Length: 419
Ligand code: AMP
Image (cartoon, rainbow, N blue to C red; front, side, top):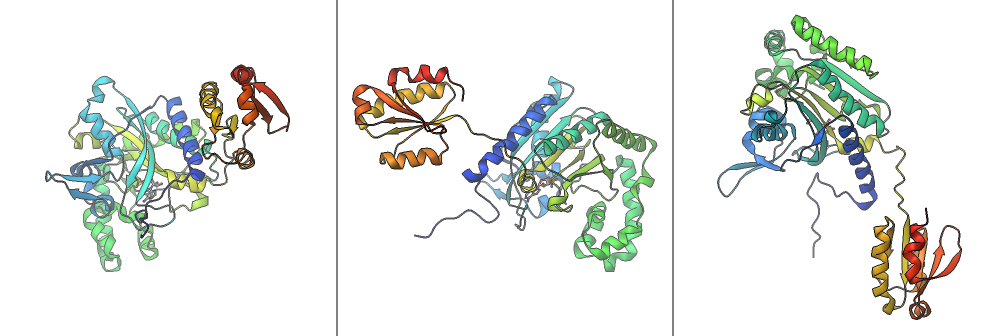
């Protein structure tokens, strides 16, 4: 029979890799908690309308990459392509703002986009992110950026680069958008089809182009900083001041425009030279209009999303945490001893010791080989003689020493032992 395989752009996380995933998740939980953020978990499927409104129908994510289908009750459902809109939906739906003026939330989970798969770009990938909903002050932006910075740093990723920008207030953006359109209009024949489309629907995104000819055109385009209001300017400078206070190095990159519609003021991206500046590890910004556009009050918010696959690629030479729990392998060749060994295994696990109990009924030699392969510290060996005498051979696999010990004394023996 033909083997059924994973769908294109999706991957299994195999046992050899899952330790790294657990390490990263632990780092995320730890850093988020240290900053007073609580975890939120939302469903993987949502009404398509959430993303049409919350992300924007003109974005690639929604218009080209979203997995959607009409369900049996005729509703249109989507696999989430990102988590900011779902978190904002949950905030509105459960009136989290009524519970406290500021909600500091973080999430970890899979997202789905029908992109062309390549290294660091998958159709099912994993994101973590934080969303601080309720504060419109620059210290909130700095806090959010510092959480992202600190997670990546403490996960051992070197050569991190933080780029920041401000796309100003809505007023500033409306004026700038018009100027940019005026500037680009004479170049329309030279623009790619994609950029021509963007010029109509989302002109700021053209600044983000990777096309060499377009980059040249953009070089002389009007600059957004010339359209900042006094408040926009002060806000951006204050964010920078707090980043200085936090000793986080950054670069100002005026061409940094996030792909999503709901951003205002601060935008930022963190990349690592190791995987190339084009592929950000983390991106975010302030999105003061989002909550309102999803039927909530006019509540400001700032957050980021980070790609976990890319982080793991960037961190592939980090020093791994030694997760070697103290471990005992129970080598049992006498079936009559299997019952008592179950009991002993349970009691030893209650002490926090990893116990691996042979279930393949292999030969003594094969079981001992397995114990070494699993890097066990001890083997508890029970053959026919030991089963009759209710004893075990206790072998210290690190030192090679061996003692006979009563089965009834095993638990107290290991309770007094530190590995
Ligand atoms: P975005 O929601 O587009 O701002 O993406 C946030 C982060 O998610 C990016 O910086 C990437 O690290 C990651 N990411 C986005 N799309 C993908 C994908 N298709 N595969 C893997 N990671 C992705």
